[in-house]
Image (cartoon, rainbow over the protein chains, first blue to last red):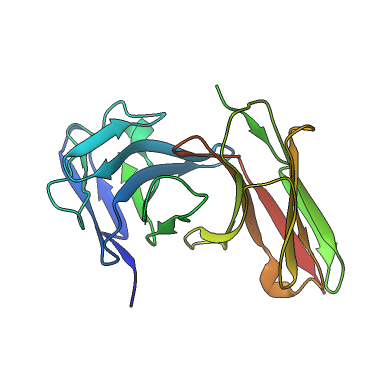
Length: 115
Length: 107
C-alpha cells in the first residue's frame, strides 16, 4: 500500500530533550516536506526537500533540523524542544514539489507535547 | 508574502449545497488546490485548478478566477461524512495553505 509513515503518533517530552520524528514514504517520491498544524493557523511548512541531499527552509524553520540522506526518509529533528513547539506535525510527499502534476500525500501525524 | 483567506466555519444540512471560498493576495502561482481533513486525520487531496474555470469531481467542484483572486470549493448533495476541515492552497513551487474552513453537516 502506498503510504507515508510517521512515528511516533504521540510524543510527550520535556524541554531541552532532543527528539526525532521519523517519516518514510514508499512511493519513490522526490519531494518531501514537514508541516506543523496549530489551531487557527492552518498548515505551516517547516522544511522541505526537493530530492536526496537537498533541503530548504519553509516558513517556520526555527528550532528544527531535517536531513535527506535517502529518498524514502525525511526525519524531523528537534535539538532542544521548547513548549512553543507543542503542535501536530505532518510529513508529506509528492512526485515533485509542483502540485499541478503532483498532489501531496500526508502521513497520519505526530502529536507532540513539550512540557 | 502569500495570504489566503477562508471562512473559519460553515454549517449546512444533509443534501444541501455549500460553497467554501478562498481569496488570496498574491500572484504568479501555478494553481489552487483543495485538501480535506477529518478530525484526527491527515489532509487528503481533493482537487486542483491550474486554469481558470470549474473542475468537477463527482459531488465536489472547484473553481478558480485569477483575475478576481478568488477560488471556491463547491460540495453538492452534502453527506454527514463531509463534515471536516477544508484547506485551499496555492502553489509557488511549494504549497502555501489557507487557515482552513470547518464544515459542519447536520441531519
